[in-house]
Image (cartoon, rainbow, N blue to C red; front, top):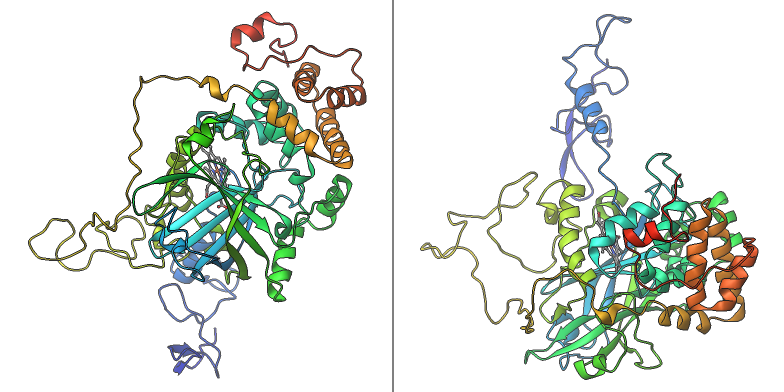
Length: 534
Ligand code: HEM
Protein backbone atom coordinates (compact mmCIF):
# COMPACT_ATOMS: atom_id res chain seq x y z
CA UNK A 1 0.00 0.00 0.00
CA UNK A 2 1.10 3.48 -0.76
CA UNK A 3 1.34 5.80 2.27
CA UNK A 4 0.52 9.43 1.54
CA UNK A 5 2.58 12.26 2.92
CA UNK A 6 0.86 13.52 6.07
CA UNK A 7 0.63 17.21 6.78
CA UNK A 8 -1.73 19.51 8.67
CA UNK A 9 -3.97 22.06 6.98
CA UNK A 10 -6.82 24.33 8.00
CA UNK A 11 -10.36 23.47 6.83
CA UNK A 12 -13.01 26.02 5.87
CA UNK A 13 -14.11 26.39 9.46
CA UNK A 14 -10.51 27.05 10.52
CA UNK A 15 -10.13 23.59 12.07
CA UNK A 16 -6.84 21.72 11.74
CA UNK A 17 -6.87 18.32 10.12
CA UNK A 18 -4.57 15.88 8.46
CA UNK A 19 -4.49 16.02 4.68
CA UNK A 20 -3.52 13.51 2.08
CA UNK A 21 -2.10 15.04 -1.03
CA UNK A 22 -3.12 18.63 -1.64
CA UNK A 23 -6.26 19.74 0.19
CA UNK A 24 -8.01 16.33 0.41
CA UNK A 25 -8.59 15.36 4.06
CA UNK A 26 -6.98 12.11 5.15
CA UNK A 27 -9.42 9.28 5.80
CA UNK A 28 -9.14 8.22 9.43
CA UNK A 29 -10.53 5.56 11.72
CA UNK A 30 -13.12 6.64 14.28
CA UNK A 31 -10.17 6.91 16.70
CA UNK A 32 -8.57 9.47 14.37
CA UNK A 33 -5.84 7.21 13.08
CA UNK A 34 -4.91 7.94 9.44
CA UNK A 35 -5.80 5.17 7.00
CA UNK A 36 -3.29 4.15 4.38
CA UNK A 37 -5.42 1.80 2.27
CA UNK A 38 -9.20 1.59 2.32
CA UNK A 39 -9.47 -0.71 -0.71
CA UNK A 40 -7.80 -3.91 0.51
CA UNK A 41 -7.98 -5.76 3.82
CA UNK A 42 -4.80 -6.98 5.48
CA UNK A 43 -3.93 -10.54 4.43
CA UNK A 44 -1.12 -13.08 4.30
CA UNK A 45 0.26 -12.87 0.81
CA UNK A 46 -1.84 -11.86 -2.18
CA UNK A 47 -4.25 -14.85 -1.94
CA UNK A 48 -4.01 -15.77 1.75
CA UNK A 49 -6.38 -15.45 4.73
CA UNK A 50 -7.24 -12.12 6.36
CA UNK A 51 -5.56 -11.04 9.59
CA UNK A 52 -7.17 -9.95 12.89
CA UNK A 53 -4.42 -7.32 13.10
CA UNK A 54 -6.49 -5.28 10.64
CA UNK A 55 -8.09 -2.92 13.16
CA UNK A 56 -9.31 -0.59 10.41
CA UNK A 57 -11.23 -3.37 8.66
CA UNK A 58 -12.64 -4.59 11.97
CA UNK A 59 -13.79 -1.14 13.10
CA UNK A 60 -15.30 -0.33 9.70
CA UNK A 61 -17.33 -3.56 9.50
CA UNK A 62 -18.29 -3.40 13.19
CA UNK A 63 -19.71 0.08 12.74
CA UNK A 64 -21.58 -0.86 9.60
CA UNK A 65 -23.05 -3.93 11.31
CA UNK A 66 -24.54 -1.64 13.97
CA UNK A 67 -26.00 1.05 11.68
CA UNK A 68 -29.64 0.09 12.10
CA UNK A 69 -31.67 1.05 15.14
CA UNK A 70 -35.19 -0.28 15.74
CA UNK A 71 -37.66 1.54 13.57
CA UNK A 72 -40.51 3.24 15.38
CA UNK A 73 -43.10 0.65 16.41
CA UNK A 74 -45.68 2.91 14.73
CA UNK A 75 -45.12 5.92 12.44
CA UNK A 76 -41.91 4.26 11.19
CA UNK A 77 -41.96 6.02 7.85
CA UNK A 78 -41.58 9.75 8.25
CA UNK A 79 -40.05 12.91 6.91
CA UNK A 80 -39.05 15.99 8.84
CA UNK A 81 -38.18 19.65 8.37
CA UNK A 82 -37.01 22.58 10.46
CA UNK A 83 -38.78 25.90 10.77
CA UNK A 84 -40.22 28.29 13.28
CA UNK A 85 -43.47 29.18 15.01
CA UNK A 86 -44.46 32.86 15.20
CA UNK A 87 -46.97 34.04 17.79
CA UNK A 88 -49.63 36.49 16.51
CA UNK A 89 -50.71 38.03 19.80
CA UNK A 90 -50.26 37.60 23.53
CA UNK A 91 -52.34 34.77 24.97
CA UNK A 92 -51.42 35.73 28.55
CA UNK A 93 -55.11 35.74 29.48
CA UNK A 94 -55.21 31.99 28.81
CA UNK A 95 -51.71 30.65 29.35
CA UNK A 96 -48.46 31.59 31.03
CA UNK A 97 -46.49 29.58 28.42
CA UNK A 98 -43.61 31.83 27.42
CA UNK A 99 -43.95 31.21 23.68
CA UNK A 100 -47.47 32.71 23.75
CA UNK A 101 -46.67 35.91 25.69
CA UNK A 102 -45.43 38.28 22.98
CA UNK A 103 -46.71 39.07 19.47
CA UNK A 104 -44.00 38.34 16.89
CA UNK A 105 -42.09 35.92 19.17
CA UNK A 106 -40.38 33.25 17.05
CA UNK A 107 -39.80 29.76 18.43
CA UNK A 108 -37.61 27.24 16.56
CA UNK A 109 -39.52 24.15 15.41
CA UNK A 110 -38.92 20.68 14.02
CA UNK A 111 -41.81 18.79 12.43
CA UNK A 112 -42.01 15.13 11.42
CA UNK A 113 -44.81 13.89 9.17
CA UNK A 114 -45.40 10.15 8.95
CA UNK A 115 -47.65 7.28 8.00
CA UNK A 116 -48.68 5.02 10.87
CA UNK A 117 -48.94 1.41 9.76
CA UNK A 118 -46.25 0.87 7.13
CA UNK A 119 -42.65 -0.01 7.77
CA UNK A 120 -39.82 2.46 7.27
CA UNK A 121 -39.42 1.52 3.61
CA UNK A 122 -43.11 1.47 2.71
CA UNK A 123 -44.77 3.80 0.23
CA UNK A 124 -46.01 7.31 0.93
CA UNK A 125 -49.53 7.19 -0.48
CA UNK A 126 -50.94 4.37 1.63
CA UNK A 127 -54.50 4.85 2.86
CA UNK A 128 -53.49 5.70 6.41
CA UNK A 129 -53.53 8.31 9.13
CA UNK A 130 -50.63 10.79 8.86
CA UNK A 131 -48.61 11.78 11.90
CA UNK A 132 -48.10 15.52 12.37
CA UNK A 133 -45.58 15.80 15.21
CA UNK A 134 -44.29 19.25 16.13
CA UNK A 135 -41.39 19.97 18.47
CA UNK A 136 -41.24 23.59 19.61
CA UNK A 137 -37.96 24.54 21.31
CA UNK A 138 -39.43 27.11 23.72
CA UNK A 139 -37.54 29.20 26.27
CA UNK A 140 -39.11 27.01 28.97
CA UNK A 141 -38.23 23.65 27.49
CA UNK A 142 -39.45 21.59 24.59
CA UNK A 143 -43.15 21.39 23.81
CA UNK A 144 -44.09 18.39 21.66
CA UNK A 145 -47.52 18.53 20.09
CA UNK A 146 -47.65 14.96 18.78
CA UNK A 147 -50.69 14.99 16.56
CA UNK A 148 -52.25 13.42 13.49
CA UNK A 149 -53.98 14.74 10.37
CA UNK A 150 -57.28 13.36 11.67
CA UNK A 151 -58.88 14.95 14.75
CA UNK A 152 -60.08 11.74 16.41
CA UNK A 153 -58.63 8.32 17.18
CA UNK A 154 -59.56 4.63 16.88
CA UNK A 155 -59.71 3.87 20.58
CA UNK A 156 -60.73 5.57 23.80
CA UNK A 157 -58.28 3.95 26.18
CA UNK A 158 -54.52 3.53 25.70
CA UNK A 159 -54.69 -0.04 27.01
CA UNK A 160 -56.15 -1.00 23.60
CA UNK A 161 -53.26 0.54 21.62
CA UNK A 162 -51.10 -2.62 21.33
CA UNK A 163 -54.15 -4.60 20.09
CA UNK A 164 -55.07 -1.93 17.59
CA UNK A 165 -51.53 -1.65 16.23
CA UNK A 166 -51.03 -5.43 16.11
CA UNK A 167 -54.28 -5.72 14.17
CA UNK A 168 -53.40 -3.07 11.58
CA UNK A 169 -49.86 -4.26 10.94
CA UNK A 170 -48.96 -7.44 9.06
CA UNK A 171 -50.50 -10.67 10.31
CA UNK A 172 -47.95 -12.57 12.42
CA UNK A 173 -47.97 -15.85 10.49
CA UNK A 174 -47.82 -14.52 6.91
CA UNK A 175 -46.15 -11.13 7.51
CA UNK A 176 -48.42 -9.29 5.11
CA UNK A 177 -49.98 -6.95 4.18
CA UNK A 178 -47.13 -4.62 4.98
CA UNK A 179 -48.63 -1.19 4.63
CA UNK A 180 -52.39 -1.22 4.34
CA UNK A 181 -55.44 -1.76 6.44
CA UNK A 182 -57.20 -3.98 3.86
CA UNK A 183 -56.97 -7.32 5.65
CA UNK A 184 -58.92 -9.60 7.95
CA UNK A 185 -57.12 -8.85 11.22
CA UNK A 186 -57.60 -5.10 10.96
CA UNK A 187 -61.26 -5.26 10.03
CA UNK A 188 -61.87 -8.00 12.57
CA UNK A 189 -60.58 -5.72 15.33
CA UNK A 190 -62.51 -2.73 13.97
CA UNK A 191 -65.74 -4.71 13.65
CA UNK A 192 -65.40 -5.71 17.31
CA UNK A 193 -64.54 -2.16 18.44
CA UNK A 194 -67.53 0.11 17.88
CA UNK A 195 -65.69 3.13 19.32
CA UNK A 196 -63.50 3.13 16.18
CA UNK A 197 -66.42 4.00 13.87
CA UNK A 198 -65.94 7.76 13.80
CA UNK A 199 -62.24 7.36 13.02
CA UNK A 200 -63.02 4.75 10.38
CA UNK A 201 -65.21 7.24 8.52
CA UNK A 202 -62.26 9.66 8.37
CA UNK A 203 -59.79 6.92 7.39
CA UNK A 204 -62.05 5.75 4.57
CA UNK A 205 -62.41 9.34 3.36
CA UNK A 206 -60.05 11.31 1.12
CA UNK A 207 -58.34 12.67 4.26
CA UNK A 208 -56.34 9.44 4.44
CA UNK A 209 -54.72 9.93 1.01
CA UNK A 210 -53.40 13.51 1.17
CA UNK A 211 -51.88 15.01 -1.96
CA UNK A 212 -48.87 16.13 0.02
CA UNK A 213 -47.90 16.92 3.59
CA UNK A 214 -48.27 20.58 2.64
CA UNK A 215 -52.02 20.16 2.07
CA UNK A 216 -52.85 18.47 5.37
CA UNK A 217 -54.42 19.67 8.58
CA UNK A 218 -52.94 18.62 11.91
CA UNK A 219 -54.71 18.03 15.22
CA UNK A 220 -53.59 17.61 18.82
CA UNK A 221 -56.69 15.35 19.08
CA UNK A 222 -57.06 15.40 22.86
CA UNK A 223 -58.46 18.11 25.05
CA UNK A 224 -55.56 19.82 26.83
CA UNK A 225 -55.56 22.63 29.37
CA UNK A 226 -54.06 26.11 29.15
CA UNK A 227 -53.20 27.60 32.55
CA UNK A 228 -52.53 31.31 33.04
CA UNK A 229 -50.31 33.09 35.57
CA UNK A 230 -53.24 33.27 38.02
CA UNK A 231 -53.59 29.48 37.85
CA UNK A 232 -56.89 29.64 35.92
CA UNK A 233 -57.48 26.84 33.45
CA UNK A 234 -59.13 26.88 30.01
CA UNK A 235 -59.68 23.70 27.99
CA UNK A 236 -58.10 23.75 24.55
CA UNK A 237 -58.04 21.72 21.34
CA UNK A 238 -55.11 22.36 18.97
CA UNK A 239 -55.52 22.53 15.18
CA UNK A 240 -52.97 23.19 12.41
CA UNK A 241 -54.55 24.68 9.26
CA UNK A 242 -52.47 24.58 6.06
CA UNK A 243 -52.19 27.93 4.26
CA UNK A 244 -52.40 26.02 0.96
CA UNK A 245 -55.75 24.48 1.94
CA UNK A 246 -56.71 20.81 2.01
CA UNK A 247 -56.11 18.56 -0.98
CA UNK A 248 -56.17 14.81 -1.49
CA UNK A 249 -55.60 12.46 -4.38
CA UNK A 250 -58.13 9.95 -5.67
CA UNK A 251 -57.56 6.29 -4.78
CA UNK A 252 -56.67 5.24 -8.33
CA UNK A 253 -54.11 8.07 -8.42
CA UNK A 254 -52.68 6.92 -5.08
CA UNK A 255 -52.25 3.37 -6.35
CA UNK A 256 -50.41 4.56 -9.47
CA UNK A 257 -48.23 7.03 -7.58
CA UNK A 258 -47.23 4.36 -5.06
CA UNK A 259 -45.96 2.22 -7.92
CA UNK A 260 -44.26 5.02 -9.83
CA UNK A 261 -42.80 7.01 -6.94
CA UNK A 262 -43.05 5.55 -3.42
CA UNK A 263 -41.26 8.69 -2.11
CA UNK A 264 -43.86 11.07 -3.53
CA UNK A 265 -44.57 12.93 -0.28
CA UNK A 266 -40.92 13.19 0.74
CA UNK A 267 -39.90 14.44 -2.67
CA UNK A 268 -42.70 17.02 -2.60
CA UNK A 269 -41.57 18.46 0.75
CA UNK A 270 -37.89 18.38 -0.20
CA UNK A 271 -38.53 20.12 -3.55
CA UNK A 272 -40.84 22.75 -2.05
CA UNK A 273 -38.44 23.74 0.74
CA UNK A 274 -35.28 23.55 -1.38
CA UNK A 275 -36.89 25.88 -3.94
CA UNK A 276 -37.87 28.43 -1.27
CA UNK A 277 -41.55 27.54 -1.41
CA UNK A 278 -41.95 27.25 2.37
CA UNK A 279 -45.14 25.57 3.58
CA UNK A 280 -47.08 27.27 6.37
CA UNK A 281 -49.77 26.31 8.83
CA UNK A 282 -51.76 28.43 11.26
CA UNK A 283 -52.09 27.19 14.81
CA UNK A 284 -55.76 27.54 15.72
CA UNK A 285 -57.29 26.97 19.13
CA UNK A 286 -60.71 25.94 20.31
CA UNK A 287 -60.96 27.40 23.81
CA UNK A 288 -63.73 26.50 26.25
CA UNK A 289 -64.59 26.17 29.90
CA UNK A 290 -66.17 23.46 32.06
CA UNK A 291 -69.74 24.77 31.58
CA UNK A 292 -69.33 24.63 27.81
CA UNK A 293 -67.86 21.12 28.11
CA UNK A 294 -70.86 20.03 30.21
CA UNK A 295 -73.28 21.26 27.53
CA UNK A 296 -72.51 18.34 25.19
CA UNK A 297 -73.97 14.83 25.16
CA UNK A 298 -70.48 13.49 24.54
CA UNK A 299 -67.46 13.80 26.78
CA UNK A 300 -64.67 16.23 25.92
CA UNK A 301 -62.27 13.67 27.41
CA UNK A 302 -63.27 11.14 24.74
CA UNK A 303 -60.65 11.18 21.92
CA UNK A 304 -63.14 9.72 19.43
CA UNK A 305 -65.09 13.02 19.46
CA UNK A 306 -64.55 16.47 17.97
CA UNK A 307 -66.07 19.75 19.01
CA UNK A 308 -67.63 20.93 15.73
CA UNK A 309 -66.04 24.16 14.49
CA UNK A 310 -69.53 25.52 13.67
CA UNK A 311 -70.31 25.29 17.39
CA UNK A 312 -66.93 26.55 18.57
CA UNK A 313 -64.96 28.45 15.91
CA UNK A 314 -61.18 28.21 16.01
CA UNK A 315 -58.97 31.13 17.00
CA UNK A 316 -55.76 31.54 14.92
CA UNK A 317 -52.88 32.30 17.30
CA UNK A 318 -49.72 31.90 15.26
CA UNK A 319 -48.08 30.43 12.20
CA UNK A 320 -45.66 27.57 11.62
CA UNK A 321 -43.25 27.93 8.70
CA UNK A 322 -41.03 25.07 7.49
CA UNK A 323 -37.99 26.57 5.77
CA UNK A 324 -35.03 24.19 6.15
CA UNK A 325 -34.45 20.52 5.46
CA UNK A 326 -32.30 18.53 7.89
CA UNK A 327 -28.64 18.20 6.94
CA UNK A 328 -28.75 14.55 7.89
CA UNK A 329 -31.89 12.44 7.76
CA UNK A 330 -30.76 9.91 10.35
CA UNK A 331 -29.34 12.38 12.87
CA UNK A 332 -32.43 14.54 12.86
CA UNK A 333 -35.54 12.92 11.37
CA UNK A 334 -34.81 9.40 12.58
CA UNK A 335 -33.45 10.33 15.98
CA UNK A 336 -36.01 12.96 16.88
CA UNK A 337 -37.94 11.77 19.91
CA UNK A 338 -41.42 13.21 20.35
CA UNK A 339 -43.21 12.76 23.64
CA UNK A 340 -46.67 14.02 24.54
CA UNK A 341 -45.51 14.62 28.09
CA UNK A 342 -43.13 17.38 26.93
CA UNK A 343 -45.16 20.47 27.83
CA UNK A 344 -43.98 23.86 29.11
CA UNK A 345 -45.49 25.62 32.15
CA UNK A 346 -48.90 26.94 31.09
CA UNK A 347 -49.90 23.89 29.04
CA UNK A 348 -51.28 20.91 30.93
CA UNK A 349 -53.13 17.65 30.39
CA UNK A 350 -56.76 16.69 30.72
CA UNK A 351 -57.94 13.31 32.01
CA UNK A 352 -58.38 11.91 28.50
CA UNK A 353 -57.40 8.25 29.13
CA UNK A 354 -55.70 7.99 25.76
CA UNK A 355 -53.56 11.05 26.42
CA UNK A 356 -52.63 9.84 29.87
CA UNK A 357 -51.58 6.45 28.45
CA UNK A 358 -49.52 8.19 25.77
CA UNK A 359 -47.78 10.26 28.42
CA UNK A 360 -46.55 6.97 29.87
CA UNK A 361 -45.68 5.29 26.58
CA UNK A 362 -43.46 7.71 24.72
CA UNK A 363 -40.60 7.94 27.22
CA UNK A 364 -40.46 4.18 27.34
CA UNK A 365 -40.42 3.77 23.58
CA UNK A 366 -37.67 6.37 23.08
CA UNK A 367 -35.40 4.51 25.49
CA UNK A 368 -35.95 1.31 23.53
CA UNK A 369 -35.48 2.94 20.13
CA UNK A 370 -32.59 5.28 20.87
CA UNK A 371 -30.94 2.91 23.32
CA UNK A 372 -29.90 5.23 26.12
CA UNK A 373 -31.55 7.43 28.73
CA UNK A 374 -29.28 10.14 27.32
CA UNK A 375 -31.31 10.56 24.13
CA UNK A 376 -31.81 14.22 25.06
CA UNK A 377 -28.06 14.65 24.45
CA UNK A 378 -28.68 14.16 20.74
CA UNK A 379 -28.80 17.70 19.33
CA UNK A 380 -32.25 17.35 17.70
CA UNK A 381 -33.74 16.42 21.08
CA UNK A 382 -31.79 18.84 23.28
CA UNK A 383 -33.60 21.94 24.54
CA UNK A 384 -32.47 25.24 23.05
CA UNK A 385 -32.97 27.10 26.34
CA UNK A 386 -30.57 26.97 29.30
CA UNK A 387 -30.94 23.72 31.29
CA UNK A 388 -29.27 22.37 34.40
CA UNK A 389 -29.81 19.13 36.27
CA UNK A 390 -27.94 16.43 38.15
CA UNK A 391 -28.65 13.52 35.82
CA UNK A 392 -25.39 11.80 35.00
CA UNK A 393 -23.62 8.88 33.37
CA UNK A 394 -25.39 6.12 31.45
CA UNK A 395 -24.61 4.99 27.92
CA UNK A 396 -23.28 7.73 25.66
CA UNK A 397 -23.36 10.48 28.30
CA UNK A 398 -22.20 13.64 26.56
CA UNK A 399 -22.83 15.94 29.52
CA UNK A 400 -22.25 15.36 33.19
CA UNK A 401 -22.56 17.58 36.26
CA UNK A 402 -19.59 19.94 36.51
CA UNK A 403 -17.76 20.28 39.85
CA UNK A 404 -18.15 18.37 43.08
CA UNK A 405 -21.89 18.39 43.67
CA UNK A 406 -24.22 16.07 41.80
CA UNK A 407 -27.08 16.39 44.29
CA UNK A 408 -28.99 19.07 46.09
CA UNK A 409 -29.30 20.52 48.63
CA UNK A 410 -25.52 20.70 49.01
CA UNK A 411 -23.19 22.77 51.16
CA UNK A 412 -20.86 23.70 48.31
CA UNK A 413 -23.17 26.27 46.79
CA UNK A 414 -22.96 24.36 43.52
CA UNK A 415 -25.49 23.46 40.92
CA UNK A 416 -29.10 24.42 40.17
CA UNK A 417 -32.01 24.65 42.65
CA UNK A 418 -35.71 24.25 42.04
CA UNK A 419 -37.83 27.37 41.67
CA UNK A 420 -41.45 27.51 42.91
CA UNK A 421 -42.22 30.52 40.70
CA UNK A 422 -40.55 29.39 37.45
CA UNK A 423 -41.19 25.65 37.71
CA UNK A 424 -43.95 23.62 36.07
CA UNK A 425 -47.15 24.02 38.08
CA UNK A 426 -49.48 21.05 37.67
CA UNK A 427 -53.04 22.33 37.52
CA UNK A 428 -54.47 21.34 40.92
CA UNK A 429 -57.54 19.56 39.55
CA UNK A 430 -59.55 17.91 42.29
CA UNK A 431 -59.71 14.15 41.84
CA UNK A 432 -61.49 11.53 43.88
CA UNK A 433 -63.15 8.20 43.34
CA UNK A 434 -62.73 4.49 43.65
CA UNK A 435 -60.11 2.57 41.72
CA UNK A 436 -62.09 0.97 38.90
CA UNK A 437 -61.65 -0.36 35.40
CA UNK A 438 -64.59 0.93 33.38
CA UNK A 439 -65.65 3.15 30.53
CA UNK A 440 -67.87 6.03 31.57
CA UNK A 441 -71.38 6.19 30.16
CA UNK A 442 -70.43 9.55 28.60
CA UNK A 443 -68.08 7.65 26.21
CA UNK A 444 -70.86 5.36 24.93
CA UNK A 445 -72.16 7.01 21.74
CA UNK A 446 -70.03 5.71 18.87
CA UNK A 447 -72.21 6.57 15.90
CA UNK A 448 -73.53 10.16 16.07
CA UNK A 449 -70.29 11.88 15.10
CA UNK A 450 -69.49 9.18 12.53
CA UNK A 451 -72.84 10.03 10.94
CA UNK A 452 -72.22 13.78 11.19
CA UNK A 453 -68.89 13.36 9.44
CA UNK A 454 -70.40 11.24 6.67
CA UNK A 455 -73.27 13.61 5.95
CA UNK A 456 -70.93 16.62 6.00
CA UNK A 457 -69.15 15.21 2.94
CA UNK A 458 -70.02 16.19 -0.64
CA UNK A 459 -71.73 13.52 -2.80
CA UNK A 460 -68.41 12.79 -4.57
CA UNK A 461 -66.64 12.43 -1.23
CA UNK A 462 -69.40 10.14 0.02
CA UNK A 463 -68.92 7.98 -3.07
CA UNK A 464 -65.21 7.79 -2.26
CA UNK A 465 -66.01 6.57 1.26
CA UNK A 466 -68.33 3.87 -0.09
CA UNK A 467 -65.70 2.85 -2.67
CA UNK A 468 -62.96 2.72 -0.04
CA UNK A 469 -65.05 0.56 2.28
CA UNK A 470 -65.95 -1.74 -0.61
CA UNK A 471 -62.31 -2.06 -1.71
CA UNK A 472 -61.08 -2.69 1.83
CA UNK A 473 -63.78 -5.20 2.73
CA UNK A 474 -63.41 -6.99 -0.60
CA UNK A 475 -59.89 -7.91 0.60
CA UNK A 476 -61.37 -9.40 3.78
CA UNK A 477 -61.81 -13.12 3.29
CA UNK A 478 -63.99 -13.91 6.32
CA UNK A 479 -67.69 -13.21 5.58
CA UNK A 480 -68.73 -12.61 9.21
CA UNK A 481 -66.19 -9.80 9.53
CA UNK A 482 -67.61 -8.03 6.48
CA UNK A 483 -71.10 -8.47 7.89
CA UNK A 484 -70.13 -7.02 11.24
CA UNK A 485 -68.65 -3.93 9.60
CA UNK A 486 -71.78 -3.44 7.52
CA UNK A 487 -73.90 -3.86 10.66
CA UNK A 488 -72.02 -0.88 12.13
CA UNK A 489 -72.47 1.13 8.93
CA UNK A 490 -76.23 0.63 9.33
CA UNK A 491 -76.02 2.66 12.53
CA UNK A 492 -74.17 5.41 10.66
CA UNK A 493 -75.99 5.74 7.34
CA UNK A 494 -78.33 3.20 5.82
CA UNK A 495 -77.66 4.22 2.22
CA UNK A 496 -73.94 3.84 2.79
CA UNK A 497 -74.48 0.43 4.39
CA UNK A 498 -76.73 -0.70 1.52
CA UNK A 499 -74.31 0.52 -1.15
CA UNK A 500 -71.36 -1.30 0.40
CA UNK A 501 -73.41 -4.47 1.03
CA UNK A 502 -74.68 -4.50 -2.54
CA UNK A 503 -71.20 -4.01 -4.02
CA UNK A 504 -69.90 -6.83 -1.83
CA UNK A 505 -72.72 -9.10 -3.08
CA UNK A 506 -74.64 -9.51 0.20
CA UNK A 507 -77.85 -11.55 -0.22
CA UNK A 508 -79.46 -9.95 2.84
CA UNK A 509 -78.64 -7.19 5.30
CA UNK A 510 -77.38 -7.99 8.80
CA UNK A 511 -79.06 -6.50 11.88
CA UNK A 512 -77.67 -3.12 12.99
CA UNK A 513 -74.77 -3.62 15.38
CA UNK A 514 -74.96 -3.36 19.12
CA UNK A 515 -72.95 -0.34 20.22
CA UNK A 516 -71.25 -2.17 23.07
CA UNK A 517 -68.01 -4.01 22.47
CA UNK A 518 -69.02 -7.71 22.42
CA UNK A 519 -67.84 -9.88 25.29
CA UNK A 520 -66.41 -13.36 24.74
CA UNK A 521 -69.80 -14.80 25.80
CA UNK A 522 -71.54 -12.62 23.17
CA UNK A 523 -69.17 -13.90 20.55
CA UNK A 524 -69.80 -17.51 21.49
CA UNK A 525 -73.59 -17.11 21.75
CA UNK A 526 -74.29 -15.14 18.58
CA UNK A 527 -74.09 -16.77 15.16
CA UNK A 528 -73.41 -13.37 13.58
CA UNK A 529 -70.58 -12.70 15.94
CA UNK A 530 -69.42 -16.30 16.20
CA UNK A 531 -65.75 -17.01 16.79
CA UNK A 532 -64.40 -17.75 13.37
CA UNK A 533 -62.52 -20.97 12.63
CA UNK A 534 -59.71 -20.11 10.23
C1 HEM B 1 -45.45 7.62 17.55
C2 HEM B 1 -49.41 10.32 17.19
C3 HEM B 1 -51.74 7.37 20.20
C4 HEM B 1 -47.59 5.23 21.12
C5 HEM B 1 -46.33 8.59 17.17
C6 HEM B 1 -46.06 9.61 16.21
C7 HEM B 1 -47.16 10.38 16.11
C8 HEM B 1 -48.14 9.83 17.01
C9 HEM B 1 -47.35 11.59 15.24
C10 HEM B 1 -44.80 9.77 15.39
C11 HEM B 1 -43.84 10.69 16.05
C12 HEM B 1 -42.67 10.91 15.16
O1 HEM B 1 -42.86 11.47 14.06
O2 HEM B 1 -41.55 10.54 15.55
C13 HEM B 1 -50.38 9.72 17.95
C14 HEM B 1 -51.72 10.24 18.12
C15 HEM B 1 -52.38 9.39 18.96
C16 HEM B 1 -51.45 8.36 19.32
C17 HEM B 1 -52.23 11.50 17.50
C18 HEM B 1 -53.78 9.45 19.49
C19 HEM B 1 -54.49 10.51 19.51
C20 HEM B 1 -50.80 6.61 20.77
C21 HEM B 1 -51.03 5.75 21.88
C22 HEM B 1 -49.85 5.17 22.16
C23 HEM B 1 -48.88 5.63 21.20
C24 HEM B 1 -52.37 5.58 22.60
C25 HEM B 1 -49.51 4.18 23.25
C26 HEM B 1 -50.18 4.01 24.35
C27 HEM B 1 -46.70 5.64 20.18
C28 HEM B 1 -45.39 5.08 20.03
C29 HEM B 1 -44.76 5.77 18.99
C30 HEM B 1 -45.71 6.73 18.53
C31 HEM B 1 -44.80 3.97 20.87
C32 HEM B 1 -43.37 5.56 18.44
C33 HEM B 1 -42.50 6.66 19.00
C34 HEM B 1 -41.08 6.59 18.53
O3 HEM B 1 -40.51 5.48 18.47
O4 HEM B 1 -40.52 7.67 18.25
N1 HEM B 1 -47.60 8.75 17.67
N2 HEM B 1 -50.25 8.59 18.69
N3 HEM B 1 -49.49 6.53 20.38
N4 HEM B 1 -46.88 6.62 19.25
FE1 HEM B 1 -48.52 7.66 19.03
